[in-house]
Image (cartoon, rainbow, N blue to C red):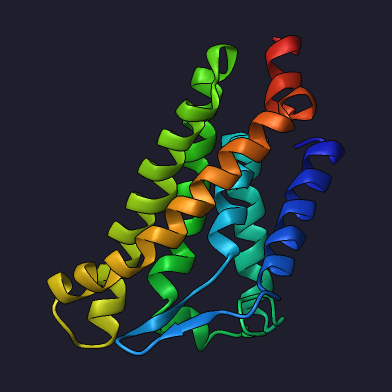
Length: 184
């Protein structure tokens, strides 16, 4: 990885940590709060591409694992990574990679609505399909109950998917994906 790519990955890890400063919204019926950090996951994929996006989220998880308060609500440490939020957090590098992969594939003909669809499929649905069953297993509830509870995240996640698609299109000219396409 080039120095510029490492810098982008580190900047996005820091950006996602900053999104963690926005207070999480706890829900009474589900132990995982609503956070702004999935916006950063989606934006990383749309803007950075698959490799750098996944790497930025791996950096982020390492920072959380060593105890830095980078998760929403100032949380960090190994306890969070084995708690109810674990599946969601560990889905982030996978989601960022998939969003980046799909964005790169469509880049020459990319449109906001295409990025929105990519974000919904990989940044909303995939994250929920990984996070909710893990949360259910950790909290000893049924997987169906976990998936049903995850529906409560949909309105906010859709708003984040829209924002990420719009911002990525506005920044398209300076995206590492654009640079990669021109250098190929």
